[in-house]
Image 1 (tube, rainbow, N blue to C red):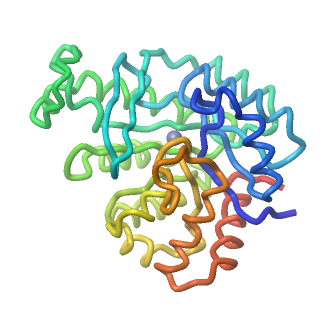
Image 2: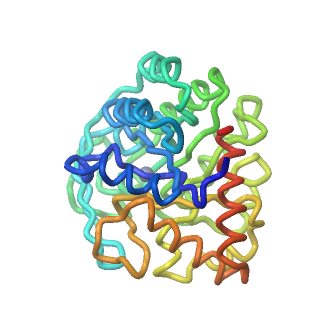
Amino acid sequence: MQPKLFDTHTHFNFNAFKDDSEETMRRTIEKDVWFINVGAESRTSQRAAEITSSYPSGVYAAVGLHPIHTYDDKLEETINGERIEFITRAEDFKPQFYANLIENSAKIVAVGETGLDYFHIRKFDSVGRNNSTPDVEAYAHTPLLQDKQKEIFTAQIELAFKYQKPLILHCRPLKNYDAYYDMLAILKENKDKLLPKAGVVHCFVGNLAIMQEFLELGFYLGFNGIITFTDDYNQLIINASIDKIVLETDSPWLTPVPYRGKRNESIYVAEVAKKIGQIKKLDFETVANKTTENALRLFRIT
Ligand SMILES: [Zn+2]
């Protein structure tokens, strides 16, 4: 059985849904949209795993430690008028904790989100102190935090390999695609630990050459609501085969047009499908079917 649409990256397990997650998820499943709740640290990973047990099908989980949860910070930024604020807490990566979650639920379909985020560490100094003024130049002084992220990312590649799970990658460069190049280097060093369908680069915002490298390593590309409010990634989408694209929302953030200003949720993934159809000159049904097939195949959901 195949649903109409598949949101490969959502966060009903986050606080933004603490009052109405069940109701919202049920409504989503009723609309024939399946989804993966992606964990970002131990608490949200555990919550994502627990949620799966209340649904016979359609609700899956990924567990992992996001790179921004490797240090304490208050993240603030504005994307297309949307204010995003987020408190992060430093957490050590405990492989056994995540291994236990995976062993106890058949519906954990991936390890993630994991990866590198250099954008948000631009305000730390050489000893890891947060000087709270975002400064691109300060970036040169953050090797400590970069090294920590790389180490934790590599450990999660190993965890995914041990349990034969695909990876959900988070990669946010600061300048000149820096984090993408470092991530590709780590993935190539660990090539023997990647599955043939290695995972997905969530919220892909790289360039064509970087896209090609991820595809060669066996990764799919995840696109979300960002593509509905900027044309910056149209060339990537035109050049990417529909067989390698999966849809996502990254809800509660990055709400697609025409719902900007509202909290994002998985049913809005239809807007991402529509936009990909416009860009690639494919009808909605084709985009919906293909991307759903891709998600089911990648995450081995039957
Ligand atoms: Zn996310």
